[in-house]
Image 1 (tube, rainbow, N blue to C red):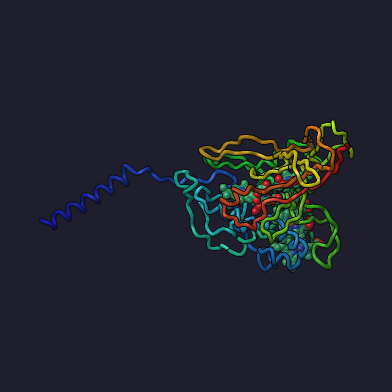
Image 2: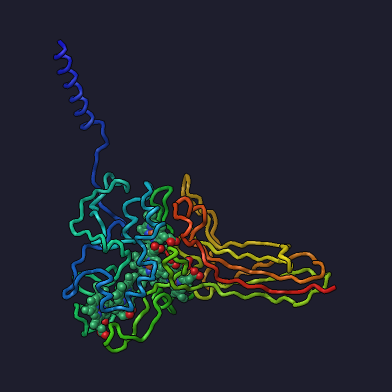
Length: 398
Ligand code: HEC
Ligand code: HEC
Ligand code: HEC
Ligand code: HEC
Ligand code: HEC
């Protein structure tokens, strides 16, 4: 009897499972990848006569290019603590890595499609050619320079020991824009909002200067020690210049120029104290800040007496503000367009006779303290740099 009940239950469970699989469960279909950033650059073989694709091996000959690239945030696009922290989050889909480690060789898995078009359910298989050391290099030499067993160059040198394909169009600004212009709402709470390319195309520098002429300064030098000097480009990819770790110092470019207003050295005790300070985005071919919406610039202006007593303190912010939940939404954006000017003012009613100063400080921030703490970046992760810090003394006479 007991045995029959057991058999009957087993049959029922089995039947229920079949009914579920055949009729109740949502059908799983594999959908193809459609967006450009869904797939990495396909697997690349090492060009003839080279030891590997690693930056260090290119650097054995192209020493200066290698030393410069090491200082670029491109070289830290994988190891960056903030990137690693964000990548671990459940809300980060598989394709986050495609611009940060853009070669298939750098990726542990090959993604061939999505289950039911769900970006959180990629169909993955192990990548037999995965190279973990190359992964650490982020946006490495081979990301931009290696295709189909050849080195992509703009000039087609005949002196190189490796095969060279002359393809200047593959190294023009469209290369940069491919990663630096991603504007898409991926899920309601996940939006990609880099429009550096569009900002440049719609701005005054289009046709004059481009990503490469501003971010890869031209120099005359041999490409390899002992070879003739040629037109070459620095590989620092200098940007905001806010370092990534306390150990990684990047080179700095500033978009803004500063124009302090006039201030009489001596004021009358009936005078209102007023000081104007102008910022102008003179040097960037796009907005300042650009790219990552977390960036912002603060200008703090104070009027103090000689004992440090503060009469006025104002802080002005340039940046975007976002709300991420329940839906990603931009709340405000006062980033400065190329050539845009902005004037800030501090003012106070007449002061008692004595010695005073106006202090102006401008800081450029990668992210705020709250987000750094949320991502557990530690106390040493540099959040900002100071790009202007001046004092303007004045007296109020008796
Ligand atoms: C054994 C030395 C050596 C190694 C290793 C090497 N190169 Fe070269 N490379 C050269 C020489 C030499 C030239 C030609 C220099 C000249 O024309 O003045 C050259 C030229 C180039 C050029 C310019 C091509 C053009 O259009 O004229 C690029 C880009 C380049 N190499 C990238 C790389 C990359 C990326 C790597 C690593 C994957 C690499 N090289 C590894 C020696 C080397
Ligand atoms: C494969 C994608 C990719 C390509 C191609 C690419 N970039 Fe980047 N770039 C990135 C990523 C990702 C970062 C951010 C790395 C980080 O902060 O960890 C970055 C960072 C930068 C920065 C530094 C931003 C800062 O201040 O922190 C500059 C400047 C820059 N890129 C310019 C360029 C230029 C110029 C080109 C074209 C020659 C280019 N990039 C090509 C993906 C790319
Ligand atoms: C983000 C893309 C990118 C990365 C990463 C990159 N390069 Fe380049 N490289 C370029 C561009 C763009 C040029 C300039 C092409 C031109 O002349 O218009 C260039 C030019 C060169 C040249 C030719 C001479 C010159 O300076 O113009 C050499 C050699 C070179 N790169 C080597 C390297 C090496 C070695 C690495 C890694 C350590 C590297 N590149 C990393 C984009 C890149
Ligand atoms: C006229 C020169 C110029 C041109 C053209 C230009 N940039 Fe910049 N870029 C700058 C300067 C200057 C900064 C530094 C802004 C700052 O932080 O003060 C900068 C900053 C950046 C940053 C860091 C973002 C930030 O807020 O600091 C990135 C990323 C970048 N540029 C990418 C690009 C790309 C991609 C292109 C081409 C579409 C491009 N730039 C064209 C001058 C230029
Ligand atoms: C289309 C290419 C692309 C994709 C896809 C992409 N990124 Fe980036 N990422 C960039 C570029 C370009 C920068 C540099 C932006 C700048 O400096 O203005 C960057 C910078 C970053 C930074 C550094 C910000 C800073 O200020 O230092 C983090 C963190 C980051 N990305 C995380 C992610 C995560 C998480 C995902 C997936 C949700 C992702 N990225 C997907 C291109 C991409």
